[in-house]
Structure formats: structure tokens, C-alpha cells
Length: 221
Image (tube, rainbow, N blue to C red; front, side):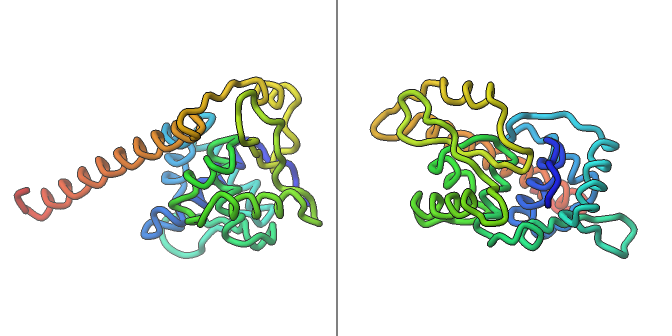
């Protein structure tokens, strides 16, 4: 039976699953890259400020559970996740779990938007189908549906890798009002805005990287 994971352990797993799809050229991740991903300010809820020692301890704990594998060889240790094999879930479900671990409770609509770079779900129904499979998993539920928020058309979902959500957290989620505009929940609009902000930040990072490479090669921009 899988042990209950800490917030940092789920963050490490989520980052590894995310970066496998979004930056495959630098995957498996070094400890420094993993630390940066855990402390990332965008696309994270809650935002944390873990130390290298804390992340290493989380990695070691996940290695003991076979959820993380350390690559052999090379000058620097690199790490990969083993979510799909250990939890026996398909890649689509692993993508949903990763986004839930990184961003907290979300509706199926938000999950579809936020999973876009990890897996492109055709529609919200396909997201819901995988969520229900994870919730009814014979080996034990990996996600749960929270009570519906006031004014919302959709329920939020949470992962259960850290155990069931605390009663006060469920109550807080259920009491949050969600306004709607033009048939689209404001929470979904917020998710899209966050996605745009993340993409803009990544474009800025890529521009800086290209400028650095050009400078090193003596190429004028």
C-alpha cells in the first residue's frame, strides 16, 4: 500500500511529470532543476520555498517507494518519475494527477486547460471519464470530488496521494463563490489567464537563452 505523501513529495512528483512533457530535452532532471520547479512562482498552488536539503529528502523518500528513479552514470544525479508504473495508471491519468499535485483542487474544465501541455484532452467529458476512473480505482481512489461551490456549475477535484482533504479545506473550497460570465466559469478564465502568463514568461526565458547563446558565439542579434 502506498504511503501518504507530504506536500513536498507530491510537488516533486508533479514537477517531474510536468517537466518530462514540457522540457524533454533537459529530462531527467537534476536536483537543481527539480528545486527550481518546486519553488516556481507560476502554475503552483500553494507557492513554496523549499531548500535543496528538503527536496533531496523528498526525493530519497520517493525513491524508497519506487515513485522516483535516479539515473546512473554522468557527473550529476538525475531523476525521473515512475508514477504510471507504480500507480498503474495510463499517461492521461498521470497528467491529471500531476496537475492536481501542482495546482491544488480544480474543476474538470480547469484541468483540461492546465493539462494542455502534458496531454491534450479532446473535451471536458474525456477529463471527467479519467477522473471517475481514478476515483473508482479498485486498488484505492487516487482522486475525490469536493462538494460543489456556491454558484458553480462544476465540482472541484483533489488528489488523494496526501490522504483525504481536511474537513476545513473542503468547507473552504465549497464556500468560495464562483461567478460566471457568458457561460464560462470565472475560475476557468483565471486558469486561461494564468496559462497565458506562464507562456509569456517561458517566451521571455527562451529569448534570454537565445541572446546568451548568440553572445557566446559572437553572433549579433
